[in-house]
Length: 182
Image 1 (cartoon, rainbow, N blue to C red):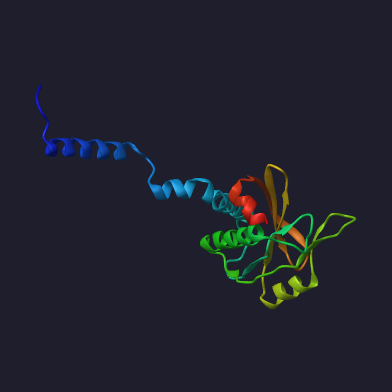
Image 2 (cartoon, helix red, strand yellow):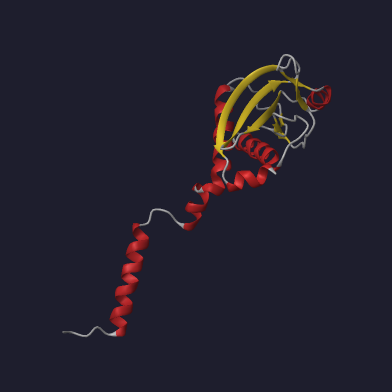
């Protein structure tokens, strides 16, 4: 039986490791990007893309938009890290698509009319939209169940409260999402 030298053994080991890494289609950053931590980003970008598709040729590139913070459907004066981060990501995606976004941090600016369930803009957000000549406002709510978070997004024309686009989606309530809802 032939003995393998330590140099030969090391060479064989390196070839095997390099061969295995070449077979792997995902790097560490890909796993992080497409694993659970990036689920929220991917979902919010897909939602923004869907809204942009509905709004195609209906938005002026010269007039800005405003993104309001997503609020809890159960308490429209309350948000969370989930709501704030989601609105930031949706706004970012609109910016990436070439839309002019006004950087605003809203909290208590969207409410539901209790008896009719209509989404309305408060006078304050309408005034801010008018002040900045915003052509539309992105608003949204989220509802939490045991297993998922359900999100409803709308793009509303502030002068008329007319809904220009709408998109619904759900996310599994994993540990990351759960921690952002506290």
